[in-house]
Image 1 (cartoon, rainbow, N blue to C red):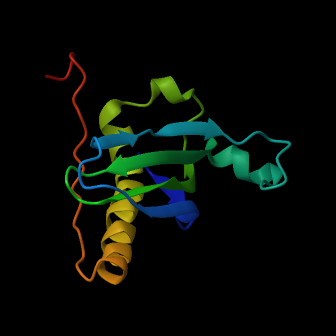
Image 2: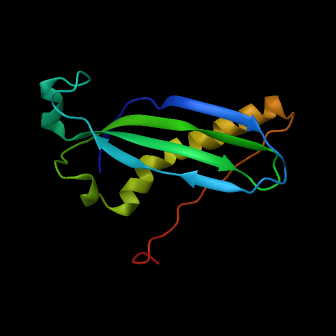
Length: 135
């Protein structure tokens, strides 16, 4: 699937020191929000090439024994060229391709912030979970 992509946006990023004994947490959500024709972001000609979506990725992560937690939201506007369907018609593999750069942004931001805050960069590595029909 061909796309036009806007730059990735860091809508929010928060770092907290927590007890190393705190229960680990990993919650990363990915959703597609369709941008409608009346949205000020669009010009009418834009929609003739394909639907435009905002990929929204809120997250809360607390690695086990790390002593820190990060949370926030990363997003990006993408146009799926020659696609006029609904988000649930997009194949799982394609969704993973669209969302992976946002996940990598979370990994990069976390590494950079922990390098400054903890004097040691902590590398997170997220992997997507397969759905039962893909396994």
